[in-house]
Amino acid sequence: MSSAFMSTRSYELIKQAIEQKKQLSLQYHGYTRTLCPYVLGKNKHGKERALALLVLNTPSGPLAGGWECLDLDHVWNIKFSDGAWVAAPSGARPDCDIANVEIDVEATAA
Image (cartoon, rainbow, N blue to C red):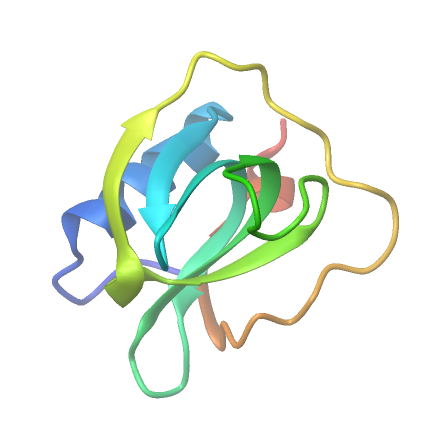
């Protein structure tokens, strides 16, 4: 699906990370997270959302190896990370309230 809306810088960086299968480091709800983004789009209300696999987190945050649904309004300080892409665990991915998917890493696999 082509993006017909003005996207944020966070959205564009996450999209690039999905296309290139790159890890990202970012701040989200007070925690530094290192993750591999898998899906990017908007919910039915037009809010930018992403689904990512958490690789590393600061203490007392969510556990690494799980899925993280990101509301991009609360994401900041995004940087590409040097780590290798981490394959998602087998099984179903959470819905993450992304009604309008623009990019899915599984759909971009060649």
